[in-house]
Amino acid sequence: MSTAAGDRSRATPAAAPPRIPVGRILHPDKSPRVANRAAHAGEAETSSFDTVLHYFDVAADRLGLGEGLRSVVRSAEREVQVQIPIRLRDSGTHVFSGYRVQHNGARGPYKGGIRYHELVNLEEVRALAALMTWKTAIVDVPFGGAKGGVNCPARDFDEQELESVTRGFVDKIRDVLGPMRDIPAPDVNTNARVMAWMMDEYGKLHGDTPAVVTGKPVSLGGSLGRDAATGRGVVYAYREAARALGLRADETRVVVQGFGNVGSWAARILAQMGCRLVGVSDSSGAVHCAAGIDPEALLRHVSDGGKVAQYPDAAGAGGAEAITPDELIALDCEVLIPAALGGMIHAGNAGDVRARMIVEGANNPTTPGADEILNGNGVLVVPDVLANAGGVIVSYFEWVQNLQHFSWDERDVNDRLGTRMRRAYREVEARARDGRVPLRVAAYEVGIERVVEAGRLRGHRGYG
Ligand code: NAD
Image (cartoon, rainbow, N blue to C red; front, side):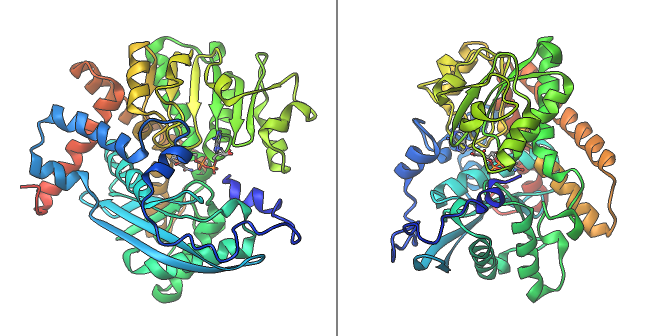
């Protein structure tokens, strides 16, 4: 469940002031590093881009990567920026910027989500594309890494505006897409409906091509289990980490930051396993209930147009109380799952974390400064490149099903997802144990090694 569809029903009424001042041109992108830091990263002391480079450099140093190879693998192979003019219902024509960054294709077609958010910028998309390169390698699916986005306020768009942006974006980038070239998927504020439009627009020129996107509606070639896959993958990662800590589900209290696709699925599946959800947030605020929050009831509340912050007043809330986002991070619990935006756990709040483990559902939620504090405090951090890889794993299954013109049943998808997540976790865990390093460093080492090997075997320039 991405928020875009749900929020459209609460779109700005016709009489309301324009969402963007008339005539304001959001294009072109100036790669606003400071804006990126301030808005997407909360109080984060580094941008997403610097965070990814930092983790890369730590692992590359340990692997002894030479300067030349390092600069090839560190940077993106292709960056596309396009203009998307859209007529908005209340304020005329606006020009948004669309980005597609193809970071590395040594291991296969580029793969990565599309994000719609007013603060999307080239530098952030770059960072997220690099993360995809390491992620696909760590879980060993035959893809490279990419990411895309449009700097539009999609949550305020009606369906027609959302469709216009999507078709306008695909129209401009379709030459770099393709089922054997680059395969988008949903991310923040995009969903199966958006993927259907993307597929349809691409198909106008190339003929019907379901394998050009993943995360489509099941009726149009999407995979059963894809919607839940990232959250389910987070749960598989939790199970492995819990095994290492000797933690049982019925003694696990969970806090989830961000109750969208990833957070809501993770919360629901963990609750089915017997874990207790004691805190949740979304962009509206946070709630706490020591006795446990029913994630199904909370999801009904959100699906009906409610905000998480309003949940304490809702029927079935069972004593939940409103708290601040800072209090949420500091709740007494065993597992904290960041599942919102990047940079939300930073040097300023990492010391408040009381969880025994963090399972990173979001991309880039933890800054290097926070990582150091958490490691020093003995908090087990399961990094994003491993913990949230369930989505790309099932995207791979969807792509395979599309290429085979054959669909698998949901149980098959979930079982195969579990097998791959367990295998990847245990490979990274073994590497971490042998190298006496945190899981994140070990994961990056595994990913970088695989990408470098693929580039060498293909004879790509610079991998020599
Ligand atoms: P989504 O749009 O469905 O949900 C995002 C949620 O975060 C919403 O509930 C929103 O209200 C909340 N949020 C936004 N700002 C917040 C804030 N300041 N504090 C608390 N909550 C806030 O998006 P999603 O698909 O669930 O993605 C969430 C994260 O997971 C992103 O970092 C995304 O890159 C990452 N991710 C998603 C997938 C996927 O398959 N959807 C895969 C891998 C990683």
